[in-house]
Amino acid sequence: MKNDIPSPSTAPYSQTRSFLTVALIELWERFGYYGMQALIVYYMVQRLGFDDSRANLVWSAAAALIYVSPAIGGWIGDKVLGTKRSMYLGTIVLTVGYALMAVPTENTWFMFFALGVIVVGNGLFKPNTANLVRKIYAGDDSKIDSAFTLYYMAVNVGSTVSMLATPWIKDYVNATWGNELGWHVAFAVCSVGLVAGLFNVLVMRATIAHIGSPPDERPLEMGKLVAVLAGSVVTVALSAVILEYQALARAFVYLAGVVVLGIFIQLIRTSQPSERAGLIAALVLTLQTVFFFIFYQQMSTSLSLFALRNVDLEFTVFGVHLWTWSPGQFQALNAIWIMLLSPVLAWVYTAAGKGGKDLSIAGKFALGFAAVAAGFFAYGVAGAFAVNGLTSSWVMIAGYGLYSLGELLVSGLGLAMVARYVPARMTGFMMGAYFVASGISQYLGGVVANLASVPSGITDPVQTLPIYTSLFNKLGLGAVACTLIALAVLPLMRRLSATHASHQ
Image (cartoon, rainbow, N blue to C red):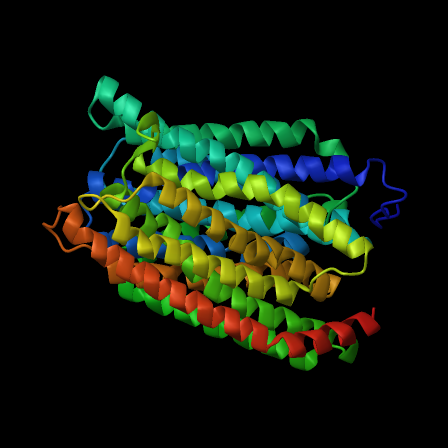
């Protein structure tokens, strides 16, 4: 039996239908993840009694583990279980993880174990869905940037709905039934979303039957499945311990960074000459991504607590009340802006590519950092217009709009960068390495967010406002520095890209 994956021209289903299947399962997975993220820091501060510093670091450590785990999950998909099987298994494990978050208990160890299950599920799911997108468009590089931008939009469709829904569900259930059950009902909704996603992909699985890694083409080996499940149980336990002991979390994150960087350098040293330029280009852009995710992590930490304490929750125009949001719902602004901007940028990339005027990924990264800088300066200057320590909710809309444009230009193209510059035989690992870099910076983002930790006992918005605006202005300056660095390496990236293209 022939095991080769059909080319796009001979595949039984169109690229669009295959892409839609993967994008929809990604949509539902992000529905669960971001629904949980919208509440998790508030849950630790308001329900479990954590101080700001501990809540920021616990969630940032969890986010780091969630982003680091795909380094292993990508290898499992490539070499052990298969890309599609790993995606299915990851979906099931994530469903269990969010269901555990729904159990009404205040035991912190229980929460850490539930987060550990989510770490494992994400590790199996995330790199393998992204790898499937790359395989769908294999040999059609002109469509990769647009495909990953639209894929990123699918992510944000799911996250928009959940980040608007779960804070509202929490507030409604708490107000109706009390007993703080709202938190756990909202987490349960995240689990239901994953069930819907799994059902969806099983119904549409024929559209991706011809896509996958070599293990997908062979019968499932139960011994390997048992080994993966056993390793997953150990990983859950280790994750819980890491989340409880912050010194261990720091050591783990920094060690992961050193190991991945070392492996990256070794791969470059031992690669074929025709592959080296592309790998170096991928490394440079991955390092830039590390800085971006430090800014990104503020959304669920410092910006989230800023919305809780220093933002007027009412949207008004000329004194006319429009609507009121829960603090957690402001995170949905990021996803809303992504959905609005993604199709526009995808069209621009395609049109520019046809005209031979497309800006390089490195150039897009520089523009992205400039937009992020403008976004944080918008938050920073908001203090000058605050009333009684509360800034307008419209400032959040403007800041998130600029920030989200930057995210699309940097993070939105990060996976496309891996797909473009990395040899196909290394894609699974490199997808994982990209997520490890993101995870390291998620933790560093939590450390940065703690510069705006509000001391215990201070509740006056007038006192908390300058704590946050000071941090946001510093982050704006940091993003300006990243912009200048990105511009400085543009000549190097042009040379590397030209060399890489000449060997294709």
